[in-house]
Image (cartoon, rainbow over the protein chains, first blue to last red):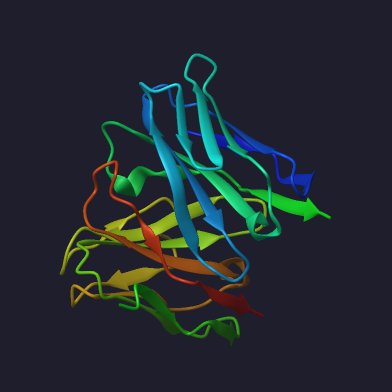
Length: 113
Length: 114
């Protein structure tokens, strides 16, 4: 069945770049998302990418998609303390509704001074 | 504009007790969802609704019931709580089901069943 996998933890130094990786199994995935969850809050959509794109950049965020390897990454440049959160990768195929968004288990990003 | 709100924020139940979680949205969204979040796991869809008066099962519906009597409200019920239902519950809503239709999440309800 469909599956989305992420490493559970990442620790980076303030000011460095963070790279959060995700792999997925659904070859028909066409929309891939990154959500951010801050402590005690719900998930918030950070960005999404369509599968015919290799890269999408939005200010400090860069999303890279390798469709052949089914690998998605989120790079956060100049990581700040406010970036501490859990980051969820999610995917959805073109032929399913929003009810079929599959979430990964989340990567907890912690920032070292 | 409050977005998506959930009540209560925390609850402790004893095994066998019942309760209802309330989700409300003021964005006139058609779609609403209930997820549960467990440690080390992604969000799993319990039930969802594509409009007022409709409900459908998600990935893990057993032990839960839902109702969508009003467009702005989506209720999640536990008739006989079990320790396996200890979790954080998130409600979400979206305008439609298109790929760009962002799901807006509530702050969550932390439920403990003893």
